[in-house]
Length: 135
Image 1 (tube, rainbow, N blue to C red):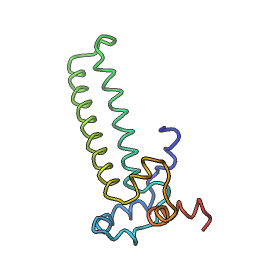
Image 2 (image 1 turned 90 degrees about the vertical axis):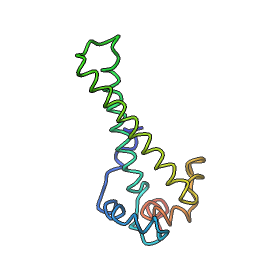
Image 3 (image 1 turned 180 degrees about the vertical axis):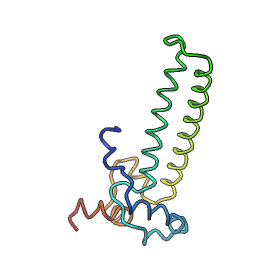
C-alpha cells in the first residue's frame, strides 16, 4: 500500500496552510479551508507517521527476535523501548484519526463503503473534486 499511495501523500504548501488553520476547522468553519487534493494534510501526516512507525516496528521487532538473531543486550533493550514507543505513537495516531472521522459528517460512510458524495468531495477535497470531475 505504501508503494501505491506514497506519491499522493507529499506535503505541499496548501497542506502547510491547512495545518496552520486547523483551529478554524475545529471551530466548525471548514468552508474556508485551503483546497486539498485526494488526501488532506492530516491524512498525509497519518500516512507518513504510520509508515515510519511500521518501519520502526519491523526493525526493532527483528532485533527483538532473539531466537533468530544474537544482538547485544543493550541493543535489544533499546529495540524494546523503540518498539513500544512506535506502537504507542501508532495507537494514538489511529485514535485521533478515528475521532476526526467520527467528527466530520460523511467520513464514516467514506471509510465504510469507499465512496463519498459529490457534495462531500467538493466541500472537503475541492482540488480532488475538480480533478475528478473537470469542474
